[in-house]
Length: 73
Image (tube, rainbow, N blue to C red):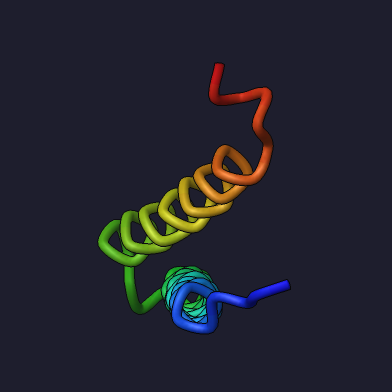
């Protein structure tokens, strides 16, 4: 059995990077939502929060699409 260490490293790197990006987007969305609730953000904070949450949902759904082979066909 041979392990392609280069491919394994790429998969691990992409997995870690996408996790960091999704968590950061979610944190920014929570912060924007909190600013809106505090009354200092208004419509811009709501738009930013909804955008961040939508990007998080899109990232999760794309990951599920890549994992589940029945969705490809």
